[in-house]
Every structure is written in structure tokens, then in C-alpha cells.
Image (cartoon, rainbow, N blue to C red; front, side, top):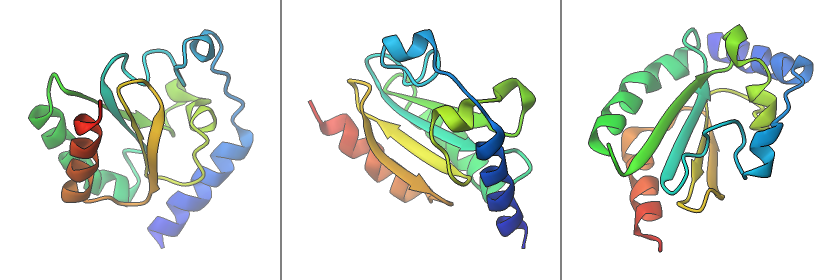
Amino acid sequence: MKNLMCTMFSLALLLICTGSAGAAAATGEVVPGIPVKGTVTLVDLGATTCIPCRMMAPILEELKKEYQGRVGVVFIDVWDPANEGKAAAFKVMAIPTQVFYDRNGREAYRHTGFLDKKAIAAKLDELLGQK
């Protein structure tokens, strides 16, 4: 039930948010600083109060430490008023959503829903192996 509520709220948020990438669009960034220039980047869009998102939080912290200096790991709480418009900028339809970028800043993979550490690490390793 809570998962359904997270999904429904995120859809409502998407419909009312009017985000603009502004200057970031000119540099290939979705929002300023994302994706991290010159490195593989994982962006997790969720909320601190969403159950599947909360389950992913410790995984993201572990990955941030394990891939430090090689991968940018970014969490964006789309329900935080400070991040208004970012769900729309990333074209998020439900949370959690993970967006993976290659070293050139191109979106390489997108997943919606809980994603376990093994699956995330496999995708990051794949992207790190690309030239």
C-alpha cells in the first residue's frame, strides 16, 4: 500500500512540477553538476519517506564509499521542496528511479523501483569498463 502511495504521489508531483534545466541543458547536464563531468554517475531519485527508497539508502552509501573517486553517486529527494522540478527534469514517472550515465554524460540505463546492490554494482562495473 505504501509503495502504491509513493508511486501515486510521485506521479502527481511529476504532473505539477515544471522544472527547467536552464543553463545545465547547454552543458549536457540534466541539473547543474549532474551527471558528474568525466565520470560514470548514478543518480537515485526518491524520497526519504518512501519505503523502497529508504531500503536503498544504505546500499547507496556503501556504493558511494566503494566506488569513491571512480563513480559519482547522487541521491535526490524529489519530495523535498528544495528539489522542486528535478523529478520533471529527469523525467521521473515513479520512485525510486535510478539513472546511470556513462563517462561522456550520456544516459546509459534507467531503472524504476528497488534495485539491489549486486545489480547496481554490475551496471557500474559495466560502465566503468567502457572506453
